Image 1 (cartoon, rainbow, N blue to C red):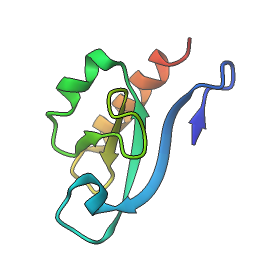
Image 2 (image 1 turned 180 degrees about the horizontal axis):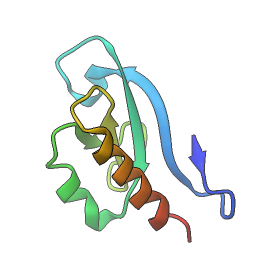
Image 3 (image 1 turned 135 degrees about the vertical axis):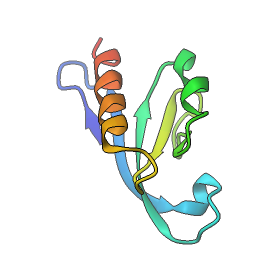
Image 4 (image 1 turned 90 degrees about the vertical axis):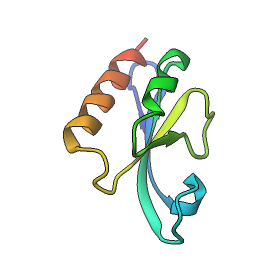
Length: 89
């Protein structure tokens, strides 16, 4: 779990879940990072391969990024930085 120190808001959660929880055709565990997003940004992000509605979180304000190489490291880092900035206040 990752929170801002100044306001205690969560912005991310790293976990291992079964791929089937994201409706991926596999029974294997996968690593994901759930990120807190604005409702306005969700639709565009969910069109990207490797990005799913947040597992175990509010599906309108959280996304799950599959950490299996589908998304580039640069894309993941960019999203983490953007989301970190937007959840600071």
